[in-house]
Image (cartoon, rainbow, N blue to C red; front, side, top):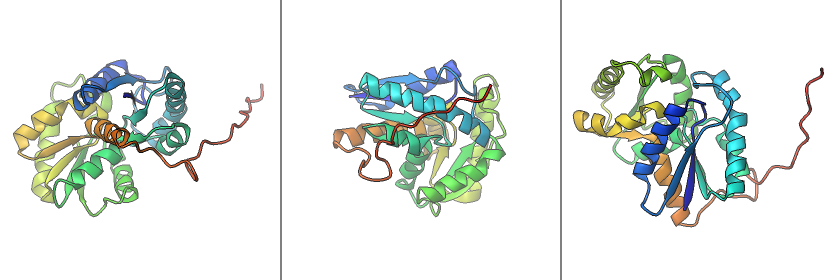
Length: 238
């Protein structure tokens, strides 16, 4: 079984972190390869960033199909390009926001999301509604830490921990969802300190893809997610 984990931004150090977290969640007989597009935004912190990342994501899916991958993870909490990727792939494609929220909904009455910047809160709320877990999402809390600073700011972990503590106290939640792939390596330590389950979407999505493949399940191809017709792409006028 081969799973391709796609970091939609082009920051290689984040791709390496994401890959390590995904492999730790996968079975021993599963090969997990983490990649990122060769072009696109270095970080995704806005709707514009997400839109710019989608062509690279779809190229990674297309390349994965040619290489024979069985399933895919889109490792950005906004789940950019998820529906289009499902059209292109034979096997399952899972976004980390959808996997994390649905996983957290199994763990208690409700969960809180701790994310990076406040400008992403509305998007996370929209995704919770789209994925049918809005009633389980009791609060969304921003740390105001830019994504790239998660790797370089020595205070980042303490700020995230404090935001998780505040979320638990104010929301009465039973679990925490980390709202950024760049936080993936923190989940186990935070869980031990907080005394609740802390869900990393990278691990959750990898486990979901693996589970779907073991059950021999894939995205339905009779309707909306059928392989799209080939279209000519017009070049811009010179």
